[in-house]
Length: 209
Image (cartoon, rainbow, N blue to C red):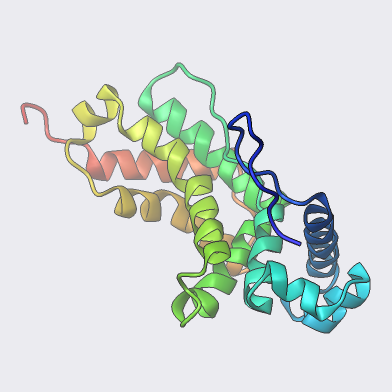
């Protein structure tokens, strides 16, 4: 198996459909096991048995069980939150943070993926493997991109001046993540508005600067 030669017309290489199907079956099995039983359920034996493929086939797609699990997480992490344009800086941040809090509460798989990456393979010898890089990028985009779009705008620059994006993300999203990890009551719109107000009050430049 493997990629087929490029067509004479100059089209790019097309992957063998049998390879595509076997990878899809492996990921279907891995994601089902992950949802039902957590990370410990996603073993090589369990996945190959559920997908009805040989171990050798799995290893043609994934170098290890760690890469397979990262790919399964990547399937389950939801897309980037979308915030409607318009409104002032505070309104946009409150809307985005409220959306993020709801997403974490209702579909916390990206939080599970963050914990898995941070406490295990994301820090070890496998950290630079393709599936792990892809998962880290996916999670980062989930949290970063919507905030980056807002904070890069002229209103944010005028009110807040130069800022460290990583610190801003920690200050705004950190309480939401901590609340979920600590199994505290979820943060609703009023709490998210308070977090944003406290952030803006602490970070706003003095008048005249």
